Length: 279
Image (cartoon, rainbow, N blue to C red; front, side):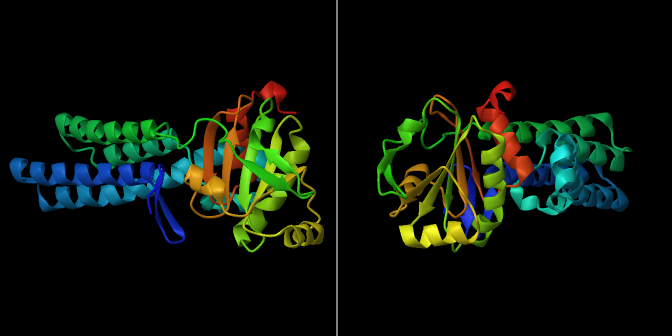
């Protein structure tokens, strides 16, 4: 299944920006193959070139993670184990690209200048395309015209949350990653008073949800029920947990598929709300 930001293969998700980076490496490899024949590279030169493309990917990924962690070091110091939880998608694209390109140039430092320019230009242009992709075709610009029941069986319209930045989390009690991120959202609700946190349950009944929240001592201000998964279909959010981030005007700013870490959640909150109004 394909959404506007990734290809979904069962429980796995391949983000388009990552796919474009891989595509860029393949194009560089193909161009290198052409130049190898045209310029008659030695066997060792070709081996170094091809190996450096593979290692460039890993150097870039590690560097992108490290830069993101350093930029959010205060959050990660509170829970160091989160540093290795790369499923939160906390990567710094610029840092990864710069580190990867630097590694590639160093490994192929004997290349002619024009070859270096060709390879770096091709790769950076495709990476720039992946950056532009983050702004590509959001499925919905503002709150959809939908109403959902709350714990008291009252109908609540999403549009009533206009006026404050709002986080809408799609979850279910049977979902392990949903359960793991619940404390993160509960803590954020306490820390960021000027942000609405809406816990939109997917397909479960009131009694089951109340029992789950009571057992785990979660106290959310806004618990709503989407019994038919209407919002997920409207927003093309495939899989749980998924989270939508709206600004105070009700405009969709960003969305996240998968488990949220404190650092990644903080990044999204910065996007939807100015730092002066967060606490």
